[in-house]
Image 1 (cartoon, rainbow, N blue to C red):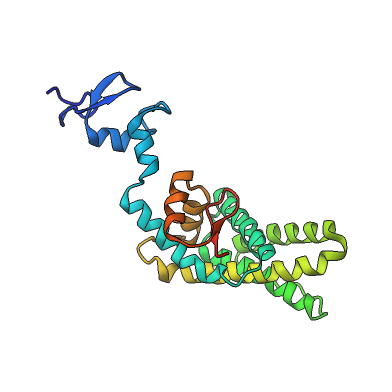
Image 2: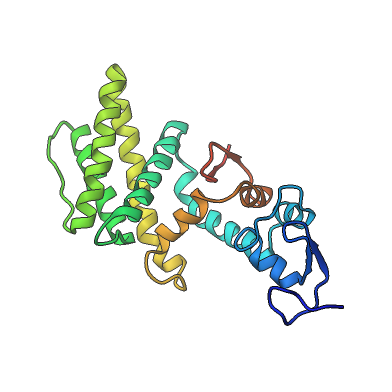
Length: 225
């Protein structure tokens, strides 16, 4: 049996429709859709989507186990807002200089939550984040809430109350992530958000198979029904 033309080490045992050649199983698994442009009808590609590696499934389960306590008591509206806030934080992380850290997410979201909670008591006071990246995130979150409340008209106060709850949970989750994922290094919570909000459908299915609840939208987040 000839050696794999990609690694030149292992025996070529798999027929690769993209390369029209035999390759080894290791190169098939590690270079799939990275260096090899796999066609949609490839049997090995379909199998990998239907049955993600055990390590991927374990990571998904671990991520969702961490997130569930922050999602369980949310209403549908609060959950939808939390999804948006998580997406805004992840987008800010990708663009921010200096980079956004978990502490910035906790501080920025917490500052806006405090401002909304104070307003709910009839007191107008703008709570400020201290770190510059946290201030930038707070400005993005505050702008979104302000515009959404304005568009909601008579429901503006309800929007602000729900946003305060969601932002408070976002702040708590960002604070707790470092202890839950000590091996991550760096922004553990933002890394988690990147995993769950960009997860491919097959990964979401793997998570959903072991986590009771329902999935709303493309983020991969699951909330109990």
